[in-house]
Length: 146
Image (cartoon, rainbow, N blue to C red; front, side, top):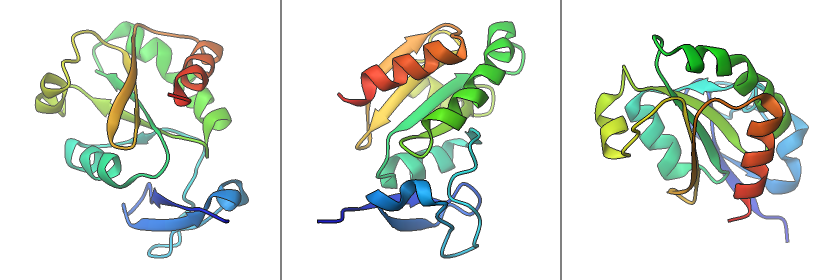
């Protein structure tokens, strides 16, 4: 049985159905033709985050950050590098707590950077503090099975 997963386009947010076995084959959006995976984190607003959370068939690894945060800026290249390894098994996204303060409050993000892993529309793991690339990959892999 070839299971299809819903994958949202990082450009237009269209919902695409992709056979699970074909995730690594460079699928493109049926709406705008953009690559569904670009091996880099996708910056999402609160509204876009909610859409991805509601419709994504793959786990979302979210980096909650702020532009004034030194550890956030220090971790940004590591998070970007982790995307090259973790996609397409999960979508890496970043949400600015400055631009989405309501979402940060709702999710009780009390320190940044904070990584949160969501699967099936709900949070399954959280890690506060900056991590190196290998730490992000190991943490995400260990928690993705939950």
